[in-house]
Image (cartoon, rainbow, N blue to C red; front, side):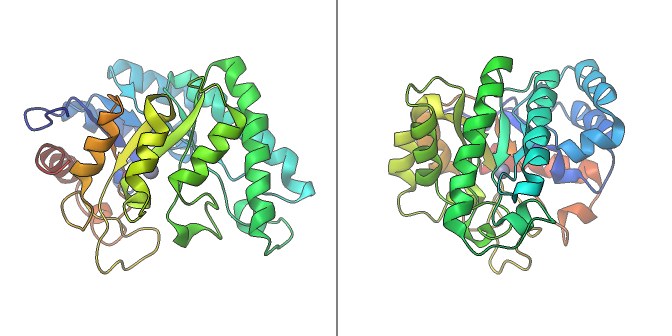
Length: 288
Ligand code: ZN
């Protein structure tokens, strides 16, 4: 297992962590100022400053990438299917423009939440089939462009609105169905926030193996959790045994970035950007 205690070379900043404190260009400048070597930007933050400007700023700062957030939201009714398809192809192309190592997929839940305006449905089985079909179709484009797709299973509390893929096992079943040859073009983003509780976590990390482990995200699970989406904790402030999960991921050969991704309306989004980044770095050394 790698020693993170001496420096933060392996830390990547998911730019949502400081999304309220500045635009993407300001975040890139702050990351560089703190010696952070990689980021994972969000599409809405990129769109706000313009793709070309964002790519240039990241390049000028010498930053690498741990992923691009995000594609997905596949379930849609017939009237919204084409828009979903086009949107995902654009996400792949944007990820390529940055030279990101993967496009992270948050696959979507029921169609009315995944693609608003779609007819309401309670059929989560159908949504899951649409997810698999959508990833299969996008994978053709991703292969053409050379952009790996990383399915991020989300905690089951998001099954209705954000992702009906809720465990590593489910994500890996999709990978095995669509990419049986383990080509490296389809895998998972393992986010400790979403998978720490899973009784099958460690066998599933082993099952994923090096070829399927495309990204590793860290934050912490707070007790109590005050908001379903925006109350993620700073590493070390919650109950996740982050280091054991990282050890398991690295035992499979994963040697990529550990990406800090914290949505925290009540706490970290309220603090100055430099304080948040300083704390991320310190906790990365001591608890990740
Ligand atoms: Zn994540």
